[in-house]
Amino acid sequence: MAATVSLRQGDLVWGKLGRYPPWPGKIVNPPKDLKKPRGKKCLFVKFFGTEDHAWIKVEQLKPYHPHKEEMIKANKGKRFQQAVDAVEEYLKKVKAKQEQNSSDDKGKKEGKKEGKKEGKKEGKKEGKKEGKKEGKKEGKSKKPAGEKKRKASDSGPGSAIKKSREQSPRKRGRPPKEEKGTISPQPSSLKKLAMKTVSRFSWPPPTSERTADDPHFRHFLLSQTEKEDSAGDSSWLLHGHRTLGTEMVLKKPSVTYQAISKRLKVSEEDTGSTSIQAADSTAINGNITPTDKKIGFLGLGLMGSGIVSNLLKKGHTVTVWNRTAEKVQCDLFVQEGAHLGRTPAEVVSTCDITFACVADPKAAKDLVLGPSGVLQGIRPGKCYVDMSTVDPETVAELAQVIVSRGGRFLEAPVAGNQQLSNDGMLIILAAGDQGVYEDCSSCFQAMGKTSFFLGEVGNAARMMLIINMVQGSFMATIAEGMTLAQVTGQSQQTLLDILIQSQLSSIFLDQKCQNILQGNFKPDFYLKYIQKDLRLAIALGDSVNHPTPMAAAANEVYKRAKALDQSDNDMSAVYRAYIH
Image (cartoon, rainbow, N blue to C red; front, side):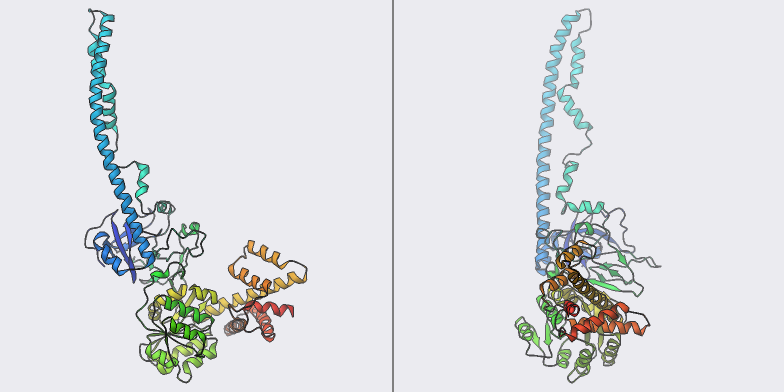
């Protein structure tokens, strides 16, 4: 996508970034403290329908009007159409302003002409009158004052109008200074620029429907930051997707305007990691362009079902398989357009990328190494992505056998629960073949809000176990606090009210306490799986001789809850281990 004409500030353009669709914008001045990327001819663009800006390479820009029909035909998304509507509204304001200025110019010209005419007339009249009066008073011996007054009449009303026009620095047709903001595509962006916001680019949510307090008002973030190496090159994260050299982690901003207005913090980890910022599935990822690769998915449990549903909603071609083929989910997904595979080997052999999400290390190994398993369908170039939460040793073993057959391997366990899976708001932790990670971009955007690439195989498993260790220990502590409140005569509801007002407040805390108060332990994250993760995390600590006493204590409580037949309930059912 290359610019065919010379572009300059104020021009409307189509801006293209990476694999994402062109978006309408306007070339504007960047904030004073925002440096232009080195080695690239770029222009700073403000995008319509959003509060976002970005440096765009000139070859990725096209003028708006000549390519309008072409772009509209190629992109049919709701958010895209709203951005185009914003451009048209902006053009209407510009046209109205021009017409108003033209009308003002005409009025000024007529006023100037009338002013001159009236000035001359009034000056002549005043001169005669004053001359007669002064002549009578001074007598014939003095010079008639009429001449003086006639000269003075040059400073009369008409001349005053003329002089004021000559002294005015404003050029004809230029709108008053305070009116300039009325033709900006988004006036509030001026405030953002003044607050020195870092440049970024996102596929926008509808501004008319979202507020700062809406939990789904999250921008599909395209963020650029400079990280200069010894050659002075810049590394960019565009829409969170790594396009050049340096590997980074980009954290998504808060949903509030206040947080969005602050400079985004981009940190480079020692391990070297990259994140792909994905979309809020209920708000703005309608603009995802699904990969043309065939996708397979093995395992339709609590997490897998939500993931497959979002892949289908975003237009991916998906073939599914589950150990119990009679599961209702299989039929539902087939009705939604999925294909049904008979065996894991068949799914892998017919698909380009196959995802798997199963319960534990044993299930993960059986799926790959068992009869008609994944390994039998692997051919050179086939991609296998294991999303199960397992130990690093299991991941390494699976990676080794897949790669030995010419396949490509990526581990990608997910942080979240059933609700977040259904909402497409999971966090994906990936490691292994980075090419596969990038090929999975549209899939990760459909199923999650953020994905991180953490380097070599095993890193994602380690990170996932640490996260779930913290979560499981926290849940056990919540249950312990709620039971202690009860046995000491304190109100559990009041305890929750206080906690929600404190710095410990979180959605997780609120939801799990509500489960306890209502006695409703319908699984959102199985208790047996969090206990499994605690066990694996403790083993991870043992492998490096690192103590994990808090996790060990929590694990014992979950084991007691399992003994009380709570395995298939939600993890919050650990509460029952304290009251029995």
